[in-house]
Amino acid sequence: MLGGPGLKKTAFAEVKTDSRFINVAHRGASGYAPENTIAAFDKAVEMKADFFELDVQRSKDGHLVVLHDTSVDRTTDGTGYVRDMTLAELKRLDAGSWFSSKYSGEKIPTLEEVLERYRNKRINILIELKKPSLYPGIEQQVANLLREKHMDRWRGKVVVQSFNHDSIRRFHQTMPWVMTGALVSYTSYKDTGVTNEHLNTFARYADFVNPNKKLVDRDLVNRVHQRGMKILPYTVRSSEAADRLFHIGVDGFVTDYPELGYIYYAQ
Image (cartoon, rainbow, N blue to C red; front, side):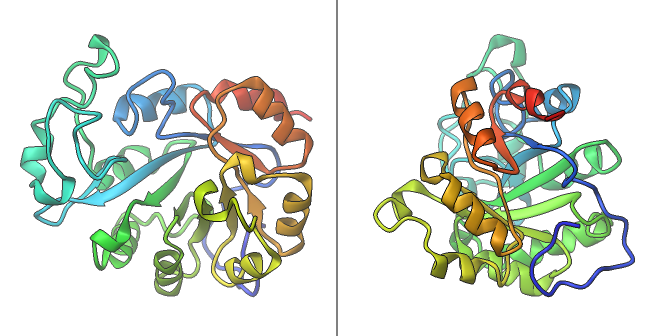
């Protein structure tokens, strides 16, 4: 069973993710479809990824929406900050044409739409709280939505992560039976590395440590495992990177190209 130290078993169903390599489609299968859209998530399902990862922010009128950047400029035909736009304004944007004309008219989804669409499909969801300091109370709002959709009942169906570790600590306190992950950026840890002190802190509230792949070596993998956590590095875009990470013992990885994880399932 996957789980953080001291977490009791529940009567809820449990999603088995520890029997094989965990293949996570980054923002959906974003190498093949526009990131953080239904098209990318459907592609991840089609490619039989174990998880797809997505980013959550909040609109001006309080809706949880799925978008990576704090502005809409890069991945839509609009301009402006997510938090300054209503859901109706966000829904009018084209979130697919920047990637390919094939995806013209693709919309920014809400988190509710994503949870409803995939709650009964054979894929799990890795939710990143993006810049939660901009959205006070977003941890409770996500928890409320998971509860409303009964998606907190399958342990491992949803994992919630963030680079903001205070935010993940708050989420864990709110809904301790839902798995959580501590994202670890290269910029913040390149000078110190991920120390035992860092890992001891993460182990109080996280089931996963998910670092930039450049920070990962066999020693870090072993130290994460010694503390009962799993490690899913990001973002893998080549077979060389995939092979290196597999052979130093990671539990899975986050990739734009889900086929990079296939070879490791049977090993």
